[in-house]
Length: 196
Image 1 (cartoon, rainbow, N blue to C red):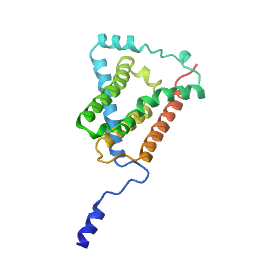
Image 2: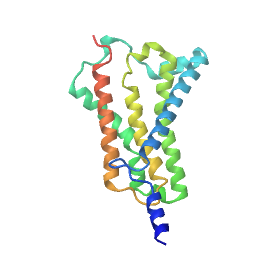
Image 3: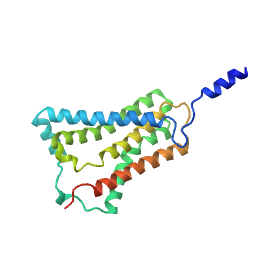
Image 4: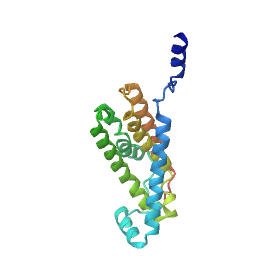
C-alpha cells in the first residue's frame, strides 16, 4: 500500500514553476500553426498569379517607403501595443466565461479563435505573397507579434483541456507574457523599420 501511494505521487507531473501548466507545448503548436498559415497564404497569393495579388494589394494598400514611416517615439509604441494586445489576449476571457465546461461552447470558442487568428494570418500572408521581399524590411517585429498571438491562442488551448479552473495567477502570467512580447514587438516595429 505504501509503495503504491509513493509510486502514484512520484509519477504525477511536476508543475512548471511560475509558468502555467501546458504552456510551452501549447505555445509551440500555436506558433508553428500561425507560421504555417502565414507562409501558406503567402505561397497561394504568390503562385496564383496577378488576380489574387491585385486583390490583396488593393486591400492592404501598404506604402513601403521610409518617407511614410512614422518617426520612432514612445507614443507610437503605445499605440501599437494598444492595437495588438486585445487581438492576442482576448482568448484568456474564454476561460473566465467557462467556455471550456460544455462541448458546444468549446467548439464555438475553437471556431471563433480560428476565425480571428486566420484573419490576421491571412492578411499578413497575402501581403507577403503580394509584396515579397520588399515587405521584409517593414515587418521585423513579425516573429514577436506571432509569438504574442501564439501566447493568446495557447491560453485557450490549455484552458479548454483542463478539468479545473485555471488559477488567476496563471492568467496574469499569460497576460503579462503576452503584453511583454507585444511591447518588444512594438518597440522593434517602431525603431527597426526604414525611416526617412
